[in-house]
Structures are given as structure tokens and as C-alpha cells.
Image (tube, rainbow, N blue to C red; front, side, top):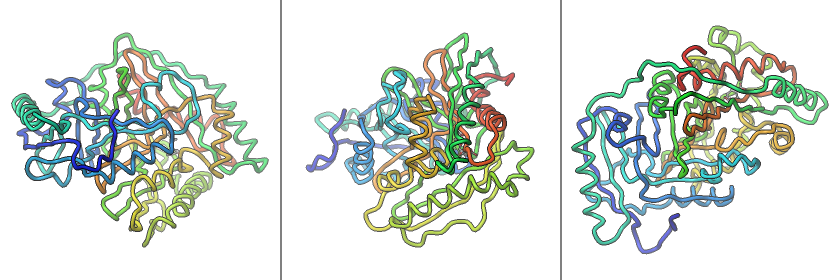
Amino acid sequence: MTTLGRADGGHWVAGRMSLSAVDPLAGAEVLGEPSVYWERPLAHEAMAGWGEAASVEAESIARAQEVLKELSALDSVRWLGEAPSALPGPWFGGMRFSAAGRDAGWGAFGFGRWTLPEVVVWREGSGLEVAAFAPEGPGAEDVVRSLLARVGVAFPAGFRHARNGSQALRLVSSRPDFEGRVERAVETINSGGLQKVVLARAVEVESEHSFDRVEVLARLREQNPRCATFLFRAPDGAAFLGATPETLCRVEGRRLETEALAGSAPPAQAGTLEASDKDRREHEAVVRYILRALKPLTEQLEADAEPALLTLKNVAHLRTGIRAELREGVGVSELVAALHPTPAVGGTPRERALEFLVEHEALDRGWYAGPVGWVGPGRAHQMVALRSARIKGSQARLFVGAGIVAGSSAEAEWRETEMKSLAMLRALGGGHV
Ligand SMILES: C=C(O[C@H]1C=CC=C(C(=O)O)[C@@H]1O)C(=O)O
């Protein structure tokens, strides 16, 4: 683990060069599976990282917030030549939804974990750039130059397309348990104890062979161009990956972009969403919460007047875009503290909803529904880790949730979570689902 914030200048030396190549994921053919991956195809943003020049772990929410603050303030990289202006990161990672839970499978991920890869390849304009990082010290510049030279020679020029090939998957998730929890949530809401709570469940997925996670990424990004496709590998070889539609915050200097995403329907019934009273209430709880949370941190806070439809391949949502100027001194750490968990993954009132989840959800969410993404000096993009799975070997544990409000039906919420699981199941090779 790295100690951050040394006062005497840079920790890491970095160099960069252009690559004659088009796709960061193609690098997996020669460099193996990336340790971190991030792509938003519609935003033309893509990056893959290999190796770890450094990692920072946090064992509590308070420490995680400190780390985010340090990583967004630190400019501890000494660039050989000009520093890139559009490099995502260079720190990549995420954190748990909450401290509650005891699934040992999440152990190696820590409460929060961020890494500075040894090699980062990212899209810039119509080409790719590569940067290499090494700890400052004698010989560090040579290490950087030789990493760049090695990657430059070997990096494949072409695009890594998703390949055909489905496989038999064994799925386990208890419908009666989930529906029982939805009914309990509706009773609590009806008795005035809560307004909204988002209940999640896990689906255990087993395949005959180890999952090819690069292939899973290739399918996820191809099928979900509006989402952020991500992967973070833990030291025990497990990886957390997914394709999520929800931005928690995008920070560029003082500029903030965020969104409320809640209210769902099958794509074929997307037209009914805007008029659905249940979905509007579910959505408005999120908008109100975000605006209230951001007020003390921002100036010129503005939200779209009406939610718009966001139609993904397997599910459509109501979406309200929110923008603001950040007050002096406010950055990603303060934003995560104020926004997470939004009622799109927790509920309202926030504390009561979180207590309900601890008591009744019977699930260690781990990094599911937590903030994941990248952070660097004055810039950050954090997504809410939805539509995601933890994968190790031939086992995957997939997570899906749904917002429960007065009038929710257990059967409909089960169907909604089934629908939300399709993107990941198909990417895992379940061509028949
Ligand atoms: C909790 C999830 O979705 C959230 C985001 C969008 C719409 C949601 C809904 O309509 O329930 C959820 O709040 C999930 O996908 O696991």
C-alpha cells in the first residue's frame, strides 16, 4: 500500500507516446487481461490499464473519502515531456456500497481500493496514447522508457470485436425470498416507516469453463454503448465488472455533471414510463434528494425541467440531467460523501432505508451500487456500479435491484430485476437467456 501526500514533490515518473492502434481492449491479446478497464463508447472514452505502479486501500468510508481527496488534489506525477490533458485517472478503483455485509468473496477488494496502473492506454482523438508510470527513484526514467517501447512495439493495431459463442450457465436466485422482501418493504412503506427502498438480490451463475472476462467486456461495451463498461481486478484474481448507465458525478475543475436515474420499464413499454405515477414518484425522490444534497456544495445548480427517456437494450429508465458549478474547495470526495447512496440505490428517508436493508436484504452488496471510476488532479468520473458482477474462475455473482414505493408489486419487481440482469447474463455467454 502506498503512502500519499509526500511533501517533497513527485512520487511517480511517467512518460507517454502515441500508438498506431484504435482499441485499448485489443491490448489484452499481448498484455493479458487488464487490471482495470473503463469505456464509455458514446462519449468516445476508453482506457485499459495493466499492472500496478501503486495501490491505495481504505478500510472505512471516512478513509475512502480522505483517499479520494488526496488523489484528486495530488499532482505527484513527474511527466517526462508534456503531461496529457485528457488522460482518464490515472487512479482507478471503487468502494463498497456500505460497511454492512460479510461475504468473504469481497475481502480482497477492501472497503475501497484504487490503483495507479504501470501502463495506461487510452483513446485520444482518432488514435490511442500510452502512458507508463514507475515509482520515482534511480533508474525510474529508464523503466518508463522501456515500458513504453515494449508496449509500442507489441500493441495490436486492430479492434477487439466480441466473438460468438454462448455457453450453458447454471443460475440460482430465490424468487420467493426476493418477493417476500418486496412485500415486507411495501408493508413498511404503507405503515409510514419509509417512502422508498431499493432492494437488490444476487444471482449465482456457474459455467462449465472459466469465464473469459476480456470477452465479457467486449460484449458489454458492444451491447451497451450508452453505459460505462468497467472492470477492476482484486489481488486475489477476482474481478468486479459491469456496464452501468448511471453517473454519480463527473467533475472537470469546477464543472459538475450528475443525473437522477430511476423508474424502469421494458424497452417496448418505454412510452408508458413518463405517465406512470409509481415510476414518477420513484424518480422524483431521487431528483429531490440530489438537488438538496448538492445545494450547499454548488452554485448555478440546474436540473432538466422534465425527466427524459433513456432507452437501453434491455430496459428503459427515466433520466433527469443535473449540472452545477462547484464551490471553491469542493471536489469528488465531498460529492461522493453528499450523494452516495442516492435513493436510486438506497431509499428515502436515507438512514431508515439503509437500516431496512441491513435488517432485511440479506445480501452483502460489496462494490455493487457503490461509486466506481477514475480520479486525478481536479478531474473525476464516478459511476454507480449497477448491472455488474463479481467473477472468479467459472463462478459469477451478479447483482440487480429495484426501487420499491407504495403500490409496488412483488411480481413486477421480480420481473424488473430479471430484465436488468439480461445485459450481464448475455455478456457472460448466456445466449439463450
Ligand atoms: C438498482 C438498480 O437500478 C436503479 C437504477 C435505475 C432504475 C432503478 C429502478 O427503476 O428501480 C433503480 O433505482 C439496478 O439496476 O440494480
